[in-house]
Image 1 (cartoon, helix red, strand yellow):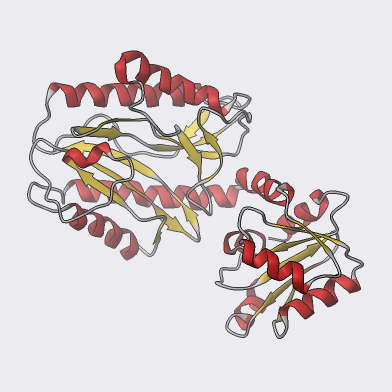
Image 2 (cartoon, one colour):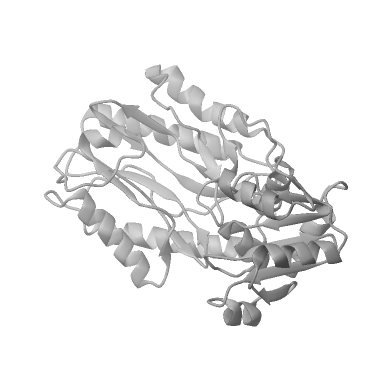
Length: 355
């Protein structure tokens, strides 16, 4: 992780002498170390990781690229570090630090100016959005397991089983393979599929219903994200039609992804297909979001993101149509953006499956 700290040091603005990183996800990104506590302080040529007794032994064994110090007086240790290195202006993570934390740091570190604008946050987001080969490998492994779990669950779902049972079976399968879960799984059926983020319950799955499953694994902290909508027993013509539109929108959007395109333009491709066929307002969320150490990262495919796509970004493509009180459908893959296109990391079948 040395190169990540070095990149951060080189990219710190001229008027910023140091950065304080307290979020668990960014601590992990820069040090490779997972913990529920700790503070990483980075100047333009030095870095220090202050951690309490619970983690000190493990941290010293695994972290390279910065000094690992046992915490005894956090604010005092930061004061000394900044004083020794001539630090006057310090940036913090505006996207992760609470108002209470900001107030505490500002009060305790009165000898320095604390900048709470978005510059550090944006800088780190820009570093994290481009995935390294190692990061991509972990995301691929997580998605491979997610695909494997889908194959397994197709043999498990049947009329009379509950949404909650399906969600738990998916989680058990993934955890049994040694991975974690990327987020709280969504498994919904029937009318509930019209709710994009519905919660699995004891509702029983019935013949003739759609079942939407949105889930993902996590390997070494890196997430996967996939949604599949399947049918049980049979479907009506309207269900087939909605599924076909959703799939067409997704395939068209994926085929248009390449480096140098505005994110909102990809969103527009899928949205136009859905809206032009009479379902305006029935696709009320963005087309996709970046994925990495967090399940929702920046940038995003949505109607407002004017950023331009770059090689190395892993992002979801997940159009959906939601008919309140009836049913809904969503299909989601993760893709890796390349110079001339993208690589679909999701292998699970996308044509409508009826079990």
